[in-house]
Each structure stands twice: as C-alpha cells, then as structure tokens.
Length: 539
Image (cartoon, rainbow, N blue to C red; front, side, top):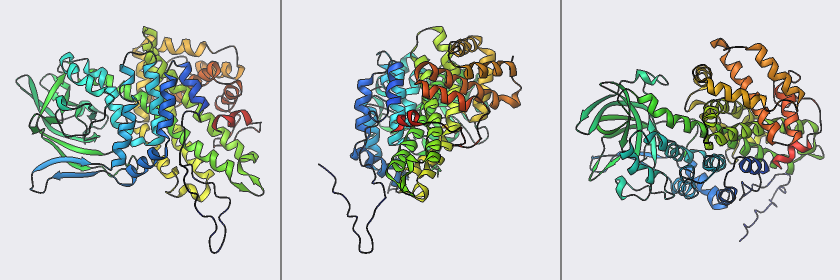
C-alpha cells in the first residue's frame, strides 16, 4: 500500500526543490560498509538483514517518533495516596522495545552461536538509527549477564529472562514474566564516577541484604532489576535489587525523572533505597571488580552507538544533498559539498571499523582476544564519541535551516550525540583507563602493538604515523597528555582496521587526512581529490 503523496500545488506557489521525507528505510541494504564489517566480524548477516528491514518500516519509524514526542511520566502514588513508583511510557516506546528484543538485541550474544557479540554490536548500530533511547535498557540487560556469573544461583534465575526474545513490561515478579530487563544505579551525588565514595549502606538480613541510601542516576527505572553498589561491612559491594517481589513492591522510591537534553524516550531517575531488599553478587568488598564486567560490555555498545548516530545523520545529509539543487546544480555535485560529505564519511567509516574491531575481540576465545578487547573498546568509545557531535552538527548544517527544525531527525540526533561519551566513563575517565590498562595489563599493550604492526608495509603514511607515535611516546605519557595519546592510538587503530578490511580509496584517504598535518582542523578542510569512491559508501 503506497502512501498518498502530499499536494505540492498551493494557492500561492508550487512546492519544489524540497526533498520528500523517506517514510520507510532498509538500514541493512542501504549500508554496504556495515554489511562488510559485519561479515568480516563473523556476525549473523541473515539475522541482521531481517532486523535492518524491520527497524526501518514506516510503522517502526512512527513508533519511535511517538516515543520521543510523548515523554515518560512518573507516577509516585496511585489515586488513593499509596506509593507505586512507576513510569508510564507511550505505546511507541513499548513497540520499539518489543522490536529490538525480538531480534535478539539483549540475548543474541549469549545464545551460543558464533559471532554473537558482533551480531549484537550491529543490532546496537541499527537500533540506534531507529530510536536510541530504547537501546538503554536492552544494552544494560545484555551487559548484566557476565556480571551475574559472580552468583550462579542468581544467574540461574535471571539470565534466561534477560536473554529471552520476549519483551514483557508487566509489573510482575521475575518468575511470572516471559522476559526481563536490567537497569543500573551506581553513581551518587557526592561521588559521580568515583563510586568508592558511595555512601549507600548494606546490612545483612539473613541470606539477603537491606540497602539504605540514594542513587543520583538510575537508568531505565521500570526495569525488573538493578545492579547497584553499596557499602557492606567489608567494603563496596555489588548487589542486584529486584524491582518487584511476590505480592509486594520493593521500597524503590523514585524521586523524580531527569529532564535531559536528549534521549527523551527513555526515562532516567533519582532513586532512594529505604531498607530495600538486595541480593549480593560476588564477595563483600569486591563491588568494582564484579560490576566492571557489566561496564566493560556496556562500553562496547557506547562505541557502536555513535557510529550508528553518525550513519543516520550522514544518510539524511546525503539524501538532502542528492535531491536538493542550488545554483543550477545538485548540492552533492558541488566540489566543496563533496569534500564535506567525504570528510564526514571517513569519520564514520573509521568509527565503524574501530567498533567492529572491538566486537570481533569480544567474540574471540583466546587470551590475546580478551586482552585486545579491553584496550580496543576503550579506544573506540573515546574517539567515536568525540567525533559524533561534530559529525552530526556538520550533517545538520548540510540541510541548512531545515536541519534545525524538529520535523527532521537532525535535532534529535544532535541532542543524542554527546550521551554515549558521558555514559560509562566520560573522556578523561576513559583516557585514564587506557593508561591504566596499558600499564597494568601488559598483554593488552602487546595485543594492541601486534594489531598495529600487522598493518604496516602497505601504506607509507600509516607507517610514518605509527613511527611518529612511538617516537613521541616511547613509554607511558604524562597524564596531561592522555587525551592526545589516546586519540593518536585510536586513529592509528582505525587506520589499521581500514587498511585490512576497507577499500583502498577509503583506507588511503583516512590515513592521508587523519594521520598527517596536511589538512585544516575543521570538517571539509582536506586536500582536493576525487571523492566518488568514498561518497559511494553513503549513497
């Protein structure tokens, strides 16, 4: 059934030179770079083809728009004055959650098939282009699975529900649900990223614990359970707080919802624990070591999500430039516009290559794979998220004034762009983590060096840049240079991945414009060249 076209003949003029919105998409078939990256990583390309088509239907796109327009609402009490502490969502949000869950967003990595984490990574990238807010609870549900291994009995109850391909938003205890979601509540007012400063207390109550305290950020507060940190007698400890109990509600007091810059479809809240029942994960005093497994896996998603946002923004910009004319020529045929779009495309392709390098390592079963995953995911998260706001803004500018209008997706993408750089460690935290990893885990440093060296010999620019990096930092950098050091390493790794897996045109252009000083600082300030092969990747 075709959508009836709007009438362009108005009383005062005819509407021309306004590219019509795309009412349905196929995120998979439109994206040859993703297809190549997913196949190289061993992902299930058949499943991804089905997901890419499903996420881009007119119905799915409308659900996502509805979810963002009608923001979540907090209900602390029912009409009788009794506490319920619930968040209500638009039906479009539930539709997006159901769609992502059914395609295995949270579960596919844990189902035992080869390439599970790479398939998950691609689903993150695709789902981000539909509705990034709905990704949050599915990402945390995916990432909670390895943390649960610290308590096998708890894992036996929760893992099947978290990995199920059934979305069940009903307010019911875990045993009565077809599927479940997991949230996270770690940071407090006084500490932020310094979770060891947390003041929430945990006291033993038989086989369980009771928590008293607060959390300044609680993600996805309608999840069925939450991983959190609290001070037990032996130190900071990881706990699982079940949201719903048999015949009762957990004392999980939602104070307010955060009024956020973006991510509007998803709720974030402040919560207080008041003698709240909790299940311990791992030993007392081992809270950071236990929950770091969840953080490690959420970082994979925060590395792929910005690549998805960049892809969405670039696709919209290219669509506009292809179908819009100025001064008797299509925008996309004008040399300066081609330089801008090509430069943006290289940022996106590098981000995609970095993200899938990490995802492949997550699927690996060797000690070297695990060591490389630790450092690669941090480098990818850092660089991809620093580039994402710049790419989305420049893509917005391609549309001119229309890019600033809410009826286009560009404002939403721009508001979303900073989020993954803040979540799970902001820039300074990630850079310091990179330095610590390279210092404390020599196997990660060795795996990274091997990956960088394996790309030498085919691109003189890359080889020279790698040598310059080693000459500049023969050992660990000073802390004040951590950002420069991390950016240099991340760009080198992206270039190495592109040399191995991308087209020669893309790899050569990336090295020439990212690893040398022969360009301006701003987007599009690159040497004149034929950018046709690069632009073909976003056509």
